[in-house]
Image 1 (tube, rainbow, N blue to C red):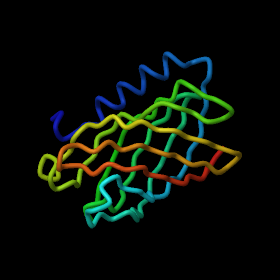
Image 2: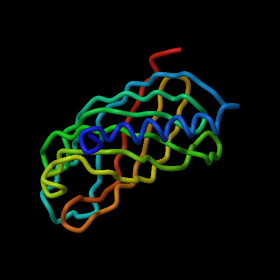
Image 3: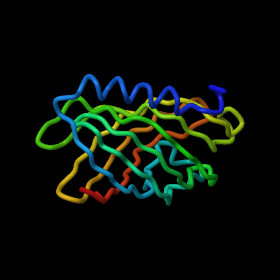
Length: 156
């Protein structure tokens, strides 16, 4: 059951973070684009245009739940779900990371689900924002790079 439902662990972590951050409660829904990725491995024929669609639910100043789907660097579709935790901020820029489950990478668990921690920075202004993630290279299975994602607040 747990192999098929990595969201269970992620949602439990989200509840724990929400309890720890109760004083800064929020309730915002964001729609996220796919990614534009600059890969560290420039000599490989990797896809840097990663169109997709995702959602983000920010329930605290430093935390959000995220899920979506995009066309990855290996030219396959990837689904993801996770929790964003960014406890540090400087001038409106949040710093932290994303603990998420991903699938769709053929050399990583034969395209199945796997967990990952990805450093991330976010900036939001009114109803628009940007997420920047530094994806680490993992052996010959995952291709590292810097990914940029636009986002738009739906409500409130």
